[in-house]
Image 1: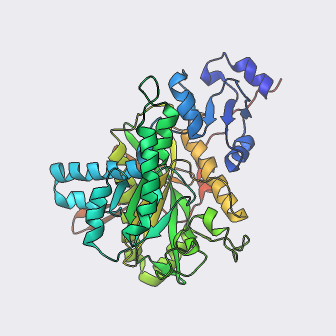
Image 2: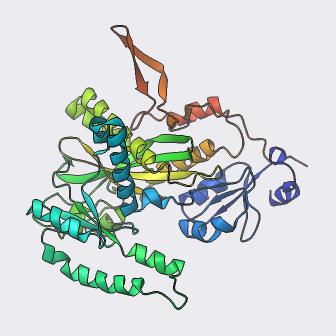
Length: 441
């Protein structure tokens, strides 16, 4: 394979017989890349066509790399505009104001899906004003650039964050001091960034199943921001806490944080059972309990969150035809079945917590590679590729097979199937021509 690749490295892309890839992760994605016909791993400084890199690699190398036409990498340069908690909220607030100015309050209200949030320490005084307006309510504090539930705590009294504020003030002083040449290094700026927090109204009335809190992990693949082209994956899962929900103990992480990294450290955690439900099971449960109309409306509201979030950063993300991004959206339902956006992950965990989870992630990643289409098998006009449905392509995408005509008007149904049947193998057989692979001697 690699000999074949080195011989073809000077040949035009169309003439290549393999895809050379680099991968900085050692979990499910590496397995999927190794198993892909006609793909060959290159080490260290070898030339590559496809790079599943981490964000650290991106920061160090993106601005110094020349990329040929066909090359693809798995992040946009400034992905953090959507995936850092403080920047996500800043962009959503700005987008909501723009909508209110240009399209009116009703349209702007479609962005009311994220909790009241303040960045600390910069918005501390605004936060205190809001805090005093709702005495006794619960708030949650999160570091803006950490993951897996690290550094998160709940509080109800201002004195609970005084200690934090003192430490913060120390950091802030340290990072505001400049180095000898009058500027701060990129590492210092990053450190300062990591030490920022957001304070957010805690959703005190989450929807519970068997007394337990859960959130949804949903996968959205963006292949372009200009024009905006976004795909929604049919599979996803609900992540449950291992302990029954109660507001009487706000210090118990096992009650309030659904992150698998937190839950698996619980003393009674069962790795065989895990704490995940696949999305189709959740959709069936909700439909049985609330009826299909209510659930259709809920999933339509969830679709709205994906599109509005992406539109809020569409003008600030540096679009690049070499880049794509697989986002992990975290959505929480309250007891009125209103969905709330909690955060968006640029590197959703690809480490499996069970065999079922491993299989889901393999399907997701295989189909991600099908959509990115290094092999050139697609026409570019597809509305479905495996488990992915095209939900937005410079405008909403509608299903071709359904249009309900009532009273002379046509209702178009959005092309989204979150939690529906994922008959991807059958669909892929019809869609994909075989990749030629290395020529035999």
